[in-house]
Length: 181
Image (cartoon, rainbow, N blue to C red; front, top):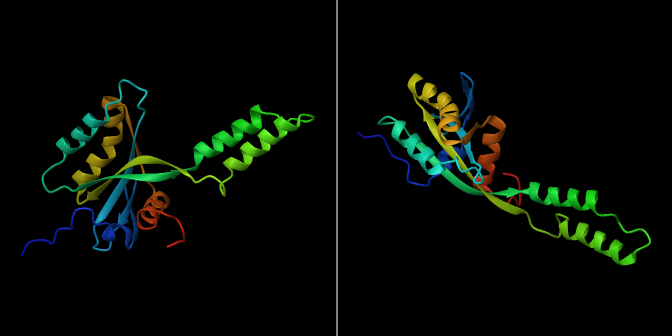
């Protein structure tokens, strides 16, 4: 009897995890089916001409052995940092316009327009990989990938800890963030 395959795009097993385990320096999600999954975010600086994300992904796939499983996730994530940066810029570089009513109105209007209740969050595309840890070879491969991708392709691979994995699973299941799950 063959092992049941997950349908492409199925996230239920991922988000209905049993908890976390730790192997070496890596936090792992223990999925509903008992598999252990490591997670990382891939970050490319597109202003760096040496960054080659397509070749990095190709390298990841080419170095995997038969039977190893990796899921590549590209999701749109709320990015409050842009709004915060603009609010700080307005506060630091514009005066409220003491004695100048027009400048005071502009200052207050900008801060009001940037307030979270007025302006929806911006979103940025983020790339994550989920890798199934099945034996010592997979742990060794996983823990050497960050240095390889940085050195050869200028791609930063940030390993996710338990809190970041939990946040990612909540985002996948509740992207509108209307209520906690």
